[in-house]
Each structure stands twice: as C-alpha cells, then as structure tokens.
Image (tube, rainbow, N blue to C red; front, side, top):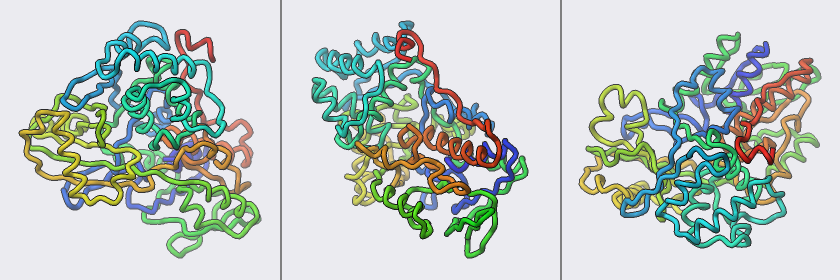
Length: 454
C-alpha cells in the first residue's frame, strides 16, 4: 500500500510511474488470493480502518473504491457464554460520546470503569512522550485493574498495534486511544472492506496505468545503484534506468538490498533495531449461520475478533451465499503462541473457542478451514523505536523510502503505510522541482471538548 500510494500520488502529479510487484497481484500484506486448499478467495488477514484514517480515505478516493467500505459505529464485546456489551456513540460531545454505553457495559465492573476513565482523562490533553516506559507499566502506574487491562486496554491495543502491552511504547498506545476513542465520534467509526483486498487495491494499478504508467507483476527489485543523473534498478536479472526510485519494501527486505555506501551503512544499523510481530487469521466455513453479528470483539480467549465474511463480502450476499452457511474469519494479533502450532491444532482451538461465544456454532458442521500466518506482519512498536524510523530522503536525493515502518508518526497500520507513500512522493516531487508538492491530507479535526486540546 505504501508503494501504491506513492505511485498514485506521483502519477497524479505528472510523473510516469513504473510499479514493480514481486507477486502476481497488488496489495502486499493487504491482499487476497484464491486459496488452493479450499478454492475460496481469502484475505491474507482481515484489515479494518477508522474514521480518523484521513490519508487512507484519500487514497481510496483516488482509486475510486471509497464506496467499497462498510461503516460501523458500534463495537460488540462478547464474553465466553455469549453475553454482549455494546459500545456506541451518543449525542454527548467528545470525549464523552461513548460514556453512556461504556457505563452500561456488563463486561467491566464499576472499579474497572472508573480506572479506565481516569486513564482516559490523563491521555486526553496530549500524547505522552516516549521515555522508554511500556504502556503496560504506564497502565499499572495509573491504577488500572487487572480486568480493565485484560478486557479493555489489551483487547483494543493488541489488535490495533499487533504487540503485547509490555512491548508497546506509550505514545503509540496513547495515539490509538486519542484518535479512536476520544477525539470524536466520526474518528472512531470502523470501516470494513466489502470486497476482497486485492480487488480493492487492483484499482490503484488501473489509476497508475490510466496516467501513462506501467505495472509489472512477478518483478521483485533485486538491487539498485544510484547514478549521476538517475537510478539503475535490477529486476529478474535485468537492469532498467529511471530518474528516481521509491523503495516500498519491508525493512528486512531493504536490508538485503542496500549498496555499500556510508548512508546505506547507517541505515542498515537502524534497521537492525527493528523486530516483527505475527498475526494469524483462521478461516472457517460452517454449514449454517452461527451468528447474526457482522463482527465482534472476543474476550478472555486466544481468538480476539470475529469477522462474519459471509455477511460482509458483497459477492457472497448478492449470490445468496450469505443466507446459508457462515464463513467467518477469526483473528489473533500478536500470535506468537500460534506460530509453531499446526493448522489442525489451531483450527481445533478456534472452533472450540468459537462455540463458547456463538451457540449456533455448537450445532454447526465445519465444512472446510484454513489458517494464514503472517509471521512478520508488522514491526513491533516498542519503546524507543521511533529514533530508528528513517525519513523518506535517508538514501536520497534520487532514492526514497516508503513503508509503514518509516517515520510517519503512525504505527504499522494501513493509514501509516499510505502516509509513508505520500511523504516519499512529496520528497521526490520537491527534489524534482515541484516546490509546493503536497499529498498528505490533514488529520480529522477534534470535536466537542477535545477541541480544547488541539
């Protein structure tokens, strides 16, 4: 997505873009494909966005797919046994807009709610600085109960940041909370794609081609070399010449491509500070409907989210498959405990836990299943990592960096990836003579009392 965002922005600005993609489809870690074992089109992992993702929404506008997102204002938290608590906005001004439903939530006790409210009050004015403290330590220092940590903070933040709270920096945790829970009701809306991810992002390739560009599939960049007036790129053993290069690759892939230069050596040292965290998606097809929910947060178990794909994907609804069986994806973020487990073990665990949350699953027959592990799904947003996140011009002036791990000010999200692409495009366009090149769009404005902290 970082490369697609940079390519679309530069194509719109008049550059003739060539996009190299090592896979036969677009989207990278946000992609889908026909799974050979099931014959079904599956996303490599469920991706969602929030109303505060202004640059991602701008990218969707460019690609013409903004109508392929279904928006939700409510979050349903399910306990084992099926008891539901719904968090939704009210008519109160931010940051109080979810207070009535939050106070009614059965999954938290009075002491838990009071502790969470005190912590929210501490986070509302501004993001705390990174002083090397983990967010778990910050929570304990701010008097959070065990249930508040397990059922609220961990549930929200492990999913958003794909890391355990004892390894998450305070600023990134605070940013997620402020942007999604406190800033405004609009900022916290959750959007879910209604088409497979590759279908969503293939239109970005069309956008580039329509503006004179080119997309080359199965063409991974193996190496590059900066010349006096351009860049030489080697892909599939062949060299091609370009004026500029945007490298939108994972940090570990970039580390294997770097040339022998002082700037590259310094960057290699910074890249060595990064580590990754895995995500696991468990896809299950049942012979009947197991829930009338489109999605739900699942508490106190290994699986953390349920996405009811047979209710979410337009094609399944339109061809009638949404009326029969259930196709669900169960997501486990920061899934280190599952990396070494077999598919059979993971499916058995997931079905057993699903039956605890959804009574309909107890009578349903599992027709087929698959497990997709993204072992290196995101970089770990640990305390202190910001000092190692590079700017897009680090290898400049003709080579630029993009990726959710670069210095975007956001964690590893789709919004962060798009921001990185826009930032790289801005830096390139400025160097090429476009002094006022600007692709980033402003953050979503705060509302209600949160305006006081803008």
